[in-house]
Amino acid sequence: MPHSTVAEIVAISTKGANHECSYDFADQPPSLSPLASRELLAAVMLLHPEKLSLDRSTSFKTIPQTLVHIYQADQVWFSRISGYAVSLAQVNRDADLQGLGARWGDLLDGYVMWAEALKPDEWSSLIQYKTSQGKDFSNPLWQIVLHVVNHGTAHRAQVVSMLRQSDVLPPNLDLINYYRAEDPVR
Image (cartoon, rainbow, N blue to C red; front, side, top):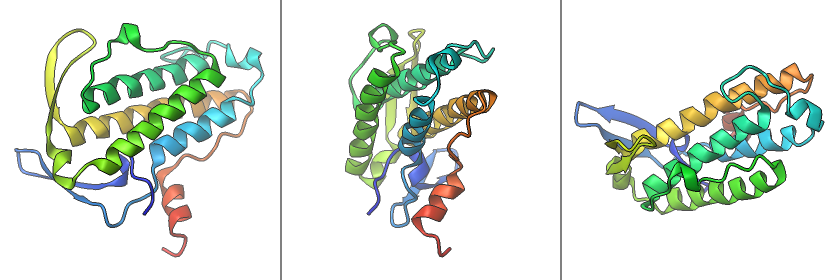
């Protein structure tokens, strides 16, 4: 069975206003978010330091700062869904890509192990948490996981654009390519 990870590996259908979900674990696509983050980081590591530090006028200005932001969000959300609180002040902000790659890899592996241990009915459990502004919220787990995947996808797309600005062919991170690689007959 391929690794499961957060939301993109499950078929989700919402039912009514009570936000019940059903998941089909029998036909799981590959774990896109961890694979995509790792592939993108590997491509970025090939860039000259001068190109890494260019201000690209994006949300987080440089490639390393954007990658650190994705990592930080992954870390904060994982702490919320796995039951231990971490504040933004505790989140590592080091933009050293070698160190980031190791820490992020460990975190992504943690997501995979966590998701593999979940029972199907746990995806609908309500998660209570505080935002970085200290506001109390709660959401079903599946919504949080979809948010984590969507957030990472949006910022990885920014990094892909920054790589193209640097005349570097980025890895193809499209979901359909992962499906095709998993089952090329379809």
